Length: 286
Ligand SMILES: C[S@@+](CC[C@H](N)C(=O)[O-])C[C@H]1O[C@@H](n2cnc3c(N)ncnc32)[C@H](O)[C@@H]1O
Image (tube, rainbow, N blue to C red):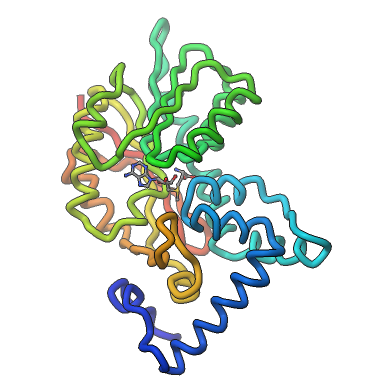
């Protein structure tokens, strides 16, 4: 089996004129010119970034669209990529742990505040609300990207959800997190830390979430221990800032250590059958 390149190796572009540079340059330009024009998911990826909330929302819907029959076919092939299948499984796991978290926090007369600190449009959360009903629930969906927030707001309106509020916020700024009121009983952080290599940044965010959460509250967090297409993604797909999308893998031990150091106790982890994405539930002490 080929040895996977490290984050640092993938973050360095291939040398100009090297065979690797020529190869990836050709693959990348075919994907952009052909895929980007014909397939709707590729168009969204090139416009907003393949790691954006807008992209993930399209992946969750899993409906192929494109120009002519060929565009739709290319879109289906892209939607079926192993990483996106893993993302849809991650959504199902996230929803299962969210239902459990709500169930555990429920008590007569108690209102539960759920906060997602980097939600994108937050379709996974809206669907759970629709399924469980809105009574006794209050939801704050935050993100740094205003387009994803506006898209979510429209979706929530279409679904008739009234207990949902969208606001811009920085998940890495503890002072900004502390502005969220009332203090939540459940916090979600999904698909965010995988985009950032620096553990100090993750620790800052987790400490901010720990301060924010009510005593006895629950944290749902994701992690990405591996991915079979790291190099293709790093060489060909732009992220939300228009830069190369270099994924930061963390072993589950590394991620759990960060969560434990911030004061949480991990209770359970769900993982897809390819081992790409995990979703975990952790609790804050009383
Ligand atoms: C891969 S998407 C995940 C979206 C959603 N949580 C999900 O699981 O489908 C990453 C999200 O993190 C957001 N994001 C990036 N940096 C952020 C920051 N500093 N604060 C809040 N959100 C941020 C992006 O705008 C994007 O919507």
